[in-house]
Image (cartoon, rainbow, N blue to C red; front, side, top):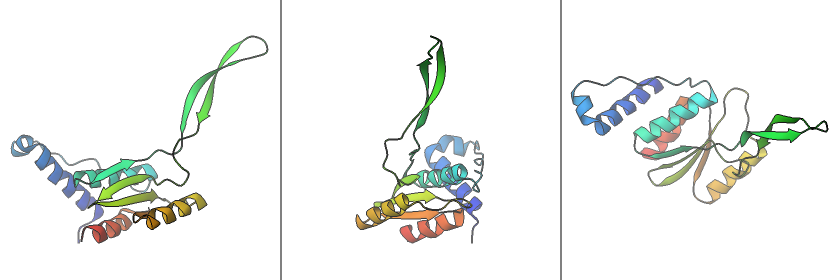
Length: 153
C-alpha cells in the first residue's frame, strides 16, 4: 500500500503530465514540496491540492474573519492607528474545506492535536448530513484517504 506522501506525489505527477504535456515530454517535472501535515494549514493544503490534482473541486474556507487597520482619535486630538477585528461572514461551524467528489458535497473540518469539534461544528455536521452531504473531522492524511477511498470506490 502507498504512503500518503507517495499518493500525494503520484497525484501531482499525473496532474502535471495532463496539464503540461510538452513540459512532461521534455522532462521538466519536479515533485511538489510536501506540506507539514502535522499542522492544520499543512493538512488543509495537502487535502485541497490532492483533490484538485484529481480534478475534484476543493476550496479552503476562511471563517475566522480578518484584521484591518483603523484610525482612532484620542481625547488629546492625536490620531492613532489601531487594529480592528472584523468577524467573518460564514456561519459558525463551517468546515475548513468545501469539496465536491464524484458529485457529492464533502465538508472537511481539520482537527490537529488537542483541537476538538465545537458545538457549532457538530450542528453544522448534522445539517450537512441531513441535506445528503458529508461532513467529517480529519486529523491525518491516513484518515483523509479512508474517507476519500470510500467515496471513489
